[in-house]
Length: 92
Length: 251
Image 1 (cartoon, rainbow over the protein chains, first blue to last red):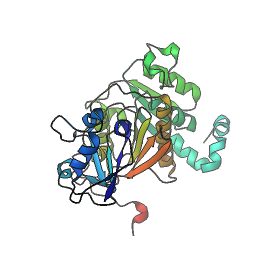
Image 2 (cartoon, rainbow over the protein chains, first blue to last red):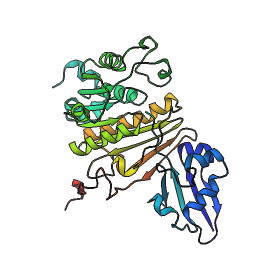
Image 3 (tube, rainbow over the protein chains, first blue to last red):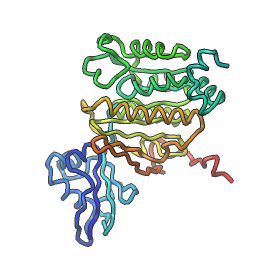
């Protein structure tokens, strides 16, 4: 089964966007993003802290619904899910 | 009532929304937080549209590194207060409106006072702590906050109506780390123009506002999209406000 991961803004610059990835049944949100982000160390560091947890400012969504960071590790992804990962854009 | 000069100046837009709409703009008072990359296009477009009173606040002086995007300021303004530069340009581009340019750092001691009397707040800031402060002022005063943010070729915008839409804290509960962000002027122009357009629609009561939607612009792909955003019932800023039903949905 496959899911689509969409990064935005700085995360997109570092990791690309609209990434289709195959996932095994029972895959959870956090390990999926971890695996994809590790393809670029800078991209990984932009999203995760040194303990492997999401930076607290990162916004996570699944199929248009917000996923709280605290819930991401126990949130499963299923075939056809669309995941969005983005930072607040701060400049003005 | 409009002078002949005003009628001529606004002729091409008064065909869209008439004397009544132009009168609404003339009576309006908009507060713009920041006279930088976003504040430049927002203030210029609101000024030429005839928004009657514009308060613009900034604490900085014009620096050469600002000039790739902050189109209110010219090379000759380097070293001047941004507010003095902004006031001069805005008053020259439209002498029939009132500009209050205030050189100040917006903080918790003065935010509510600075915004006093405004019908809406434009977020043209470069940091989240001050954005959160104005988000709270908007909630207390029950006036809209027109949010914009830019970085590089990317930008975002949303219109916050306290009590109805998610507030800034619902959407972005935690601030990103502060940085000297890379940016091109065209991104500021694009997002600032979206914000100005939102202000005009709000004041005129026309169209569909960017409410409950985060507008996202990817200039690299020339692609715009939006993400639905929802209120957080546990939001520390607006969670205690009862949800209002928009008038048109009332039975």
